Amino acid sequence: MRTETFNVEQPVRAVVRVPAGRVEIEASPRQTVEVSLEATRGGDELEQQAAIELRGSAARPELVVETPKRRFGLNREEYRVTILLPEDSALDASLASADLRARGRLSEVDLDNASGDVELGEVTGELKAKSASGDLKVERVGDGASVHSASGDIEVAHLGGEGTFRSASGDVVVRQAEAGLGIQTASGDQTIGSAAAGEVVLRSASGDLHVGIKRGSRVHVDARTASGELGSELGLGEEAPAGEGPMVELSAVTASGDVRIVRA
Image (tube, rainbow, N blue to C red; front, side):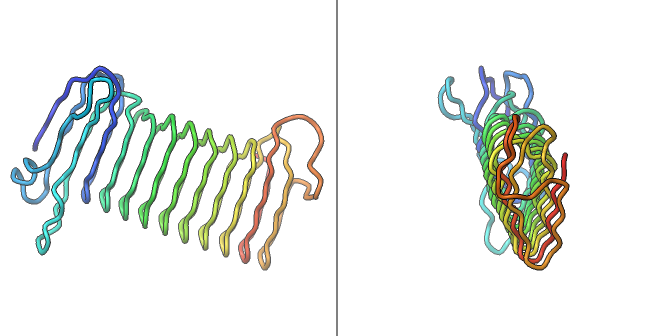
């Protein structure tokens, strides 16, 4: 196993390029960056070929962790990587089929993966993610989120800013949404546990739509389904409701899926 330690005075931007295996990241109050890298095939040779460097300036440090590219015709290399970062560091990760788990608080995340599964703790800023078949699970996003997936499931426990989510056959779940949402799926189901304010636009071909409206929020609903069932605990009408409280402008349309609207 190869290990590297760097002294830093502030959070860093971590650039991680690991095609296969598993990446563990922990962000906590600290003034060092520690990286442990183990190649499950190829051993010391591949570990020494990996780039583990601290670049940039003291004011804008950048950690680079990049494993060698896959060698054609050989067994696929896999890596186990552990990275300990200062709290509020940023993450830029390209993973292919590697799984990633990040604990602690990151400032922002830009993620590109194919089939690996990803779990994130808290992202105080913006989340951007693209995935083919890997699942994405996030505890909290403080700002906006833009997530595109083909068949992977997407789950965000708490979203503070506006969110845009697209998936073909994967399900999309947002437990708490504080601002506007735009979600589009083909056959994937959509579940909004609690929408507090903003424009919420949900579109699906055959997926079911389930939306909870936060108590205390007003709502204007435009909900339609061609061959599915439509049910609502709230009144459906063309006029926006009077009164005080945040407004949710909900538009939920599915072709053959069901639509259910409730009070959260």
